[in-house]
Image (tube, rainbow, N blue to C red):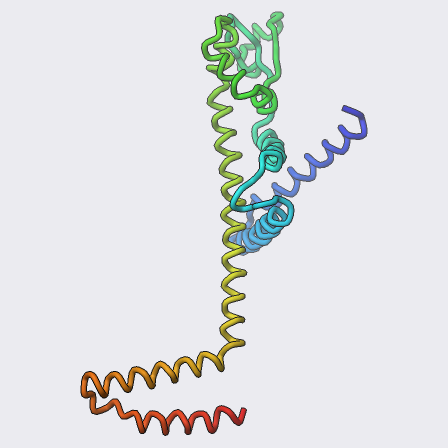
Length: 232
């Protein structure tokens, strides 16, 4: 990685951490309310961006888009759960921070492991470690497979969040369009309503002998209504 690219990535990570700390610490319920509303607006913008940039979203997500999203989730996950240095002692992975002081100077083999390393293996390669003849690989799988599962669930949940938010936005937009359509066609609604009333009145009078179903009075009432309404 070039120095320029590394510097840019570091700056991006620092900015992300700073923004996160601004939004997940609170000094009062008023502060909580403000930041909750701020996050809600951010989620809306994220869902709109996904709708604009992922073909078929939210009904489907192509593999390339999903991989790019997950690379972002992985970056955030590595911020929440930073890399840890381990000493390999008798084949076991022991965090160096947990080693007693009297043993810290011993020349143990050491490795740094985080979610980037754990997820660098394909599903097939990672699964093969479980039954490997190499006991070291088996111990690696046993130690870190729970973390791989935890991250996978985390990433899938973030995708679900994005899909649900996008579907909600689509539903809200659809609802507004239906409302505008109904308002523009209100005259048609009145015509349809009166036609239905005439039909019901006639049916009630003829079939059920309903004395309140007076078709003549209804026609006069509708005519009187239209005389006023149509002047508008």
